[in-house]
Each structure stands twice: as structure tokens, then as C-alpha cells.
Length: 338
Image 1 (cartoon, rainbow, N blue to C red):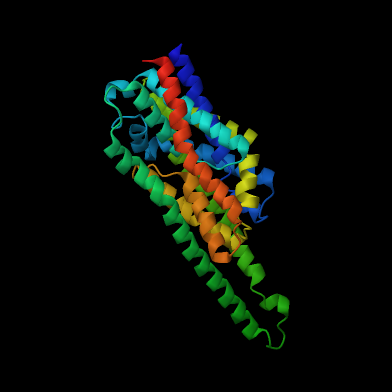
Image 2: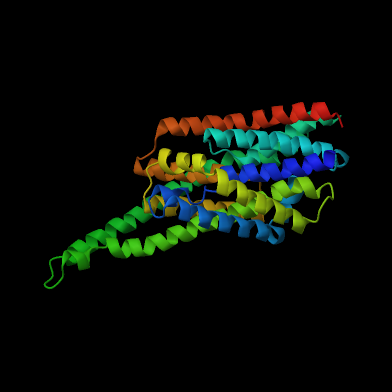
């Protein structure tokens, strides 16, 4: 019975993760009116599935990290009851945030679930040193790093755009050249839009790579299924959740947080994709949510287009994620008592 509940909880967590995270790469694409919602959703879902399948080969370090080993004893980390408490606590938190329209971190929720389940079920408690260096530090630093880098990249791209415009104006007075032929806008747009779409797809791919093994670890640690089949099941559940329930979080990130244009979108996406893929390769548990939202905030700060009331609400939801997930996992672990 516990095994069946664990399988359901892990797949429901994957479903919830997809619903909350699926659109985070393409938030800038819809927000800047580069693509309509449905087409952006199709591309986001496809890239996420590909990333989930690729995670089997390039992100195995995250599987070991999110099995709970190092935070609690190996014997407890391998029990279905522990994994069930972690999955249920994280899933309940993420689906609640999704229905409220808040882009929260599944990684953060999983860490909360690991802590809550560990406190409820472990006789020796949780290894706080490993918690700080292995989980909390990357989660806290990544949004600040992404915001700062996105700020810098946006300023650089805007400077390039302005210089192109000034150069075109300089040639505007030459005989036989019209304003249409000298304007840099069509050429700049032709260059920036494909890059924008590629960067958005890269984020969704990176998210699939980063998030799939974290959830698959809940199944792999109990030897229920092979890593390959676990990753496939998680990737498909993420795709279904993303397809059905992405809209509310997409509206927050695309339309409410920041008034985006294509240059902001490319700046934010390039930083997000680079940081998430790099973190996945080295087994660092950064949150795609924190990195992508941090990047959007960084570009918005540079452009002066942020809605600070929405920023505050999102940040508060981040603060609440870990304790809520820990509380749910603790309650479920206490009830299971295994």
C-alpha cells in the first residue's frame, strides 16, 4: 500500500511541478508578445520533456542528492515511508501555490519535505551542516546571481541596440536611402526573436534536466523502477501538469511581474538557461523558479518596468514554501510512523 501511495505522490509531485514550472522559460516570450500563449505552451512542454529524458545522462548527481542521503541515515532514506512523506509534503505545497498563481520552487519544497520527514522519522534528526552547504546556500545565492547577471546583460544588449540606432541615423541623410532601409529595428528584431525563442526553449530543457532527477530520486531510492523508466514517467507527468494547469503562474510571470520586451526576454533567458544547466551538471540544487524570476526582476530593475507589489508577493511565497512543505511532510511522516 505504501509503495502504491509513493508512486502516486511522486507522480503527482511531477504533475504539480509541471503546472508551476512549465511556462517559466516561455514567460518572457508570451509577456513580450513574441508568441501567443498556446504556441508558447506547446514549445515549452516539448522542450521540458526532452530535458527530462536527457537528465538520465547528464544530471545523475541530483538523484543521489535528493534521495535524502546525507541529510538522514541511509536506511531511512531508502524506505518508502520517508519518500512518501517527502513527496506528499512537496506536492501539496506546489499545487497550492500553483492554484494561487505563485511561481514557487519545487526544489525548495523538496528540501522542506526532506527536512520535515527527517525530523518526523529519524531518531538522529537532520544533518544541518549538509543542509546548509548542499541545499540552502545554492538556493539562496542563485536568484541574486541571476538578477545581477541579467541586469548586466540587458544593459549591454540595450547599449548595442542604441548604437545601432545612432549608426543608422548617421546614414539616414545619404541620397537614395529611406528611413525604412536605414532603420535598425527590422534587422534587430530579425536577429533577436530567434535568439529569444532558442533561449526560452533552452530554459525549459534545462528545467527538465534539473527537476526530473530530483523527483525521480523518490522512486529510484526504493528500487521500485529503473532510473530510465522513473525519469520517463516523471517527464510525462510534468508535461501533463504543464499542459493543463500552467495558465495562472504564466500570467503572474509574463504579465504581472514585469512589462517585458524582447531584449529583456533574451537577457533573462540566457542567464537562466546558463545557470540552471551549469548547476545541473555539477549537482547543485538551484531552483529554476528562483533563477528565472531573479533574471526577470534583474532586467525589470534595469529597465524600470517592475511591479514591486507583485515582486513582494512572489518573494513572500518563496519564504513560505520551505516551512509549509516541511510542516506537511512532518505531519504525514508522524502519521506513517515508519
